[in-house]
Image (tube, rainbow, N blue to C red; front, side):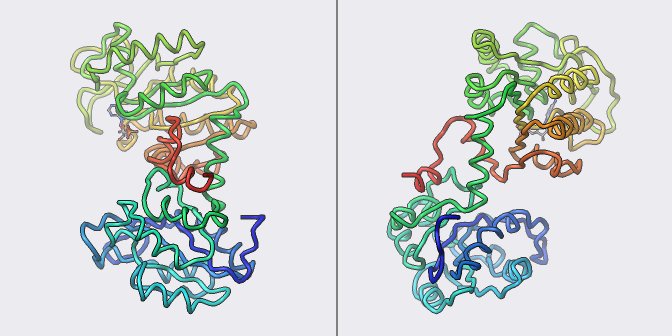
Length: 393
Ligand code: AMP
C-alpha cells in the first residue's frame, strides 16, 4: 500500500463489512468497518477513488432486503467524513456505470456480493465482471481470506501487477507471523474452548512452534481422563482420548510443556445457579462437572505468562457466558494484559476469546486482537490461505 500511488486510480477493495445489525438495521458493532478505514483513507488521500465490496450475512438465493449493504451507507459515510455512493448490484450495467462515473476522492459501495451464487463458487466470469470495475485490487478482509471466493481470491488473477494487501490484512498477517514464525521466546499458547476435537490440528501444528501450551476449558477433561484422572460428569470426548494421549506424548518428545489446570471449579449442574466448589482437576466427584479453571491453576498460569515473551490466546478457560464460571477466563485475560505491559507480544484470536477480551475491557491491553475467526484458526493450522496466496502468487 505504502509504495503504490493511487492517484487517478479506481481501487476495488474487498472489505469484511459483515457486521451485526439490529431489527432496525442499526449496526451494533462496527469494529470491522473501523478496521478498514485507514486503507480507504490512504487511497483517497493519494487522489484515488474507492469501490468497496463485501458480503453481509448468509442470503440463500438472490437479493434479500435484510442483507442489503445499503443499510451501511450512512454509517460508513459518517466514519469517513465523505459521502458514500451506492450501486444496487455488484456487477453488470448498474455497477459498471457507477464505477465509470466515479471521480477522484469518491467512495462507492457495491451491493452484497453473496446476492450472486457465483461469489462463493469462485466463478471466473463473475470474478472478471468484478475486475472490470477497478484499476487495482486491494484485499483488506482477513475474515474471508480462508475462502477461495470470487472477490477474495479469483478476482486477483485479473490484476497481475496491481494487487496488494490492505493495511488491516497486512497487520493481521504480520501479527500472526510474529507468533508463528519469528516469536521471541518463551512462546506460550493458551488454548481453551469446549472441545479437543475442534482444536487438534492447531495444537498439533503448535507443538512444532511453542515452548508451553496452557490448556483450559472443556477440553481439559479429555486430557485429564487420558492421564487416568477422575473427571466426574465433565465434558469428555471419549473418541479423542487416544488423540489426547498422543498429543501428550508428542509434546514430551518435542520438549513442549503442556500445562493442565491443577484445580477446577466444579458444579453439580450446567447452570449459573448450580452449587459449586473447587477440587483437583483429576479428582472430580461423581455428579460434578468442571466448568472453569480453579484458583491454583490461575496462579500457576499467571506465573508462566509473566515469564513468556510471546503469547497466543485462543478459547475461553471456562463457561464464561455464565458469571459463576467466568473468573478463570478473566484472570487469564488479565495475566496476558499484565505480561503485555511488561513487554510481551500477545495475540488474541478466535471468536470467543475476542468476545472475552471485549467483555472484560482488555482489548486495548493486549498487543493485537485478530478479526480473523475461522481464517486465523486455519492460518494457525499451517494452511496457506487462498486469499493470501492469490496476492502473493
Ligand atoms: P470453542 O468455540 O471451542 O472455542 O468453545 C467455546 C465454548 O466453550 C464457550 O461457549 C464455553 O462456554 C465453552 N466451555 C468452556 N469451558 C467449558 C467447560 N469446562 N465445559 C463445557 N463447555 C465449556
